[in-house]
Image: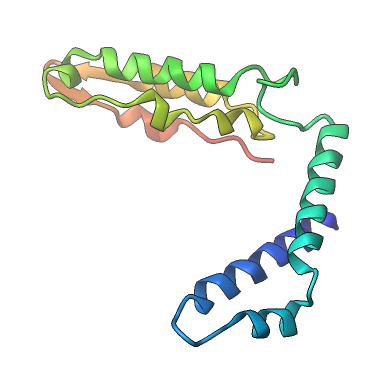
Length: 144
């Protein structure tokens, strides 16, 4: 229930910001009329409460904070290292940047993505001098 309300509030805020970005189409007074004076503070408090509830339920994140999921960032780095080590991609000058591919936020995910990144790493290979990444399509992102 909280997630649905939070999602609805976030969607409303996004809609207001997205469509309100056109000049003179939506101003601060319209925002306050629609959502009330304290909407931003209420939304922030609701998000903090939802995150606290997730932490209580054991879904605090992907691992960097002591949860049972392991370290999603470390698993992502393993995939990037494998990808970047392929000779067929090195010779083409194609490399992934671990900092871009594996943000610290991965450890805040409620999903254990270690198997996904292991699958991605295993699927990276060369067929002679040609990259063969077809196996990546078999790697499924985990769902909640």
